[in-house]
Image 1 (cartoon, helix red, strand yellow):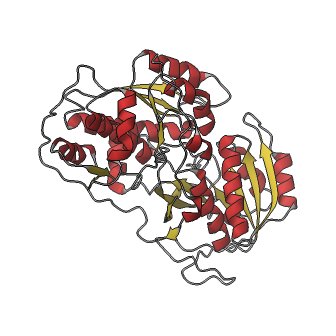
Image 2: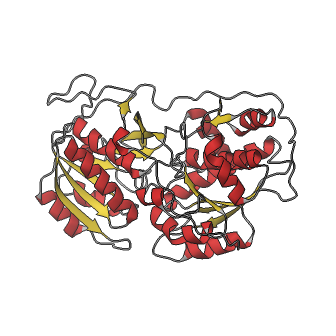
Image 3: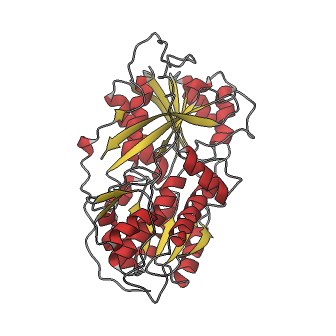
Length: 448
């Protein structure tokens, strides 16, 4: 374990008042009468804009010639650990995140690796906040000498291990943490993430429900750092748009009965219902729809926007919508991920995980070191201000030719703040079809 001097917490340079959310794919005009460009599935005053015809189509491939050899080589190969969920309430996020990590590792090594050596990766389960799996896994990863840990997915889980990781002089890089609490955490400059703070997702979803015509909203919320943080930001945005939150019901991780929360929400007769949960949605959704709530009244978040084709009868979620931070996974990127894991059903945070590998690898090249503290010093620099590049091969070619780079990845433009947060990001909005699978509908871009 490396002992580091204590430093003051990094102060976020995020200016919340400057958040500008622009709907890219379609206009968000309101009105009580749906037009031809609006969804025909209207219920409880809900009529959302129609999906964009081009949502999630393709991405622009980066082209590069031969990658020049590293001018500086390392005696110690870059070793990364992953702390991602294969068990627990967020286990559905594990496969796409792990596939994103493995794809990133493959492409880095196909381009010759970092500082002349192939990058190594060790995967460990993060579990969830009901277990101590994350602490045990972190201890094992640190014992193997990793320079960076990619994870956890859950903000609550990350809070249990962030001091252990950063206190060891190791970078913690989450592809999915969204709690605003990490912006000012005393992490010694070692905590980074490619997922934007819930300040942005909350603002987008709150505004979007108002755009869809909802005047009142009920909320069922997981009582943890993730749930209550997102609840606060959704509520603030919805009320700022002129709406009213008429009911808020919390539950705890590990709860299995939700009838009381559902009954109180339904009694308030909201136009729309925001479900801020993890896989508890599998129990909550049937309770709501069984009591007359139409799926088009349901708005979900990244913690539960998942494939429910094997969980519900056809049509159960048709018209429901959900938000996931990050741009849509494009078709060519999905094909690469499926080559890594043919069983993938979801792509949530795959891009953010892939980008984490590339950014850490590029920062290691820029630092000419595989030491975590040195890598951290270069992460912001490789994300901004230089020549644009979109994959490891093209970016490392520029670095080795003495150029400054600005990495833009599969998750979006990234561009880190001093606090290790993305300062600009996309939020994807997805709509459920009759098979209870979600498809891209539109994207919103915002700056923090």
